[in-house]
Image (cartoon, rainbow, N blue to C red):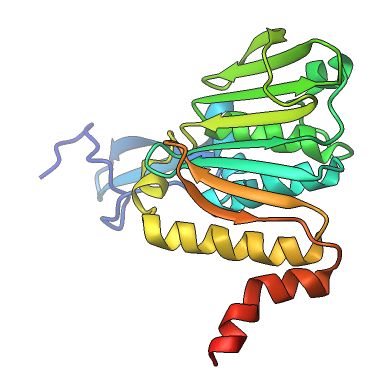
Length: 249
């Protein structure tokens, strides 16, 4: 039994306190007093904010909710930049994704501003959320006949912007390493075959919507998992994807 002046982390109903909601935690304190008639224990509660970094991680996890969601957002980002080629390298065990394209490059000013949370600039907001959820994020951009620059974030903090090498004549490369390193349950829930199947299905659908773009998907060892060549129209893209299945039936 509790002695006067002690508190066993339970309220007057014998139930433990828990957090009220995301972004807040409950802090409790107990007061013990006696009278000639009875003894009572009363509990006062106050709400405190979570650390800013923790709150930011929770918020970002609602914007980038899964490995597939991250993959889809990065590919869509490349498409919006007017690319004709998208090359993706994935490491499911490492929770890493690398997306390269030959679309419109980021100017040095844009690269310097990436990672800021702005509703008017979706790309920057995406990088902001990836930085909060990943061990390391690297963005490389190069314009034809010009020097390539890279912007690096590590452990949620900006490392800096510097010159870099880039294998494509022009375009962009975004590398996400250790996605959900601060959410280990999400990492452990990934099943290789299921994830690969989902990513391939997504690329099939996107290739029909954007037939002028070619897509290459490979693993971290360089093994090709899927290649979809560009087509002149969505109808041709559909035939390429499903003609063999139709002929078999």
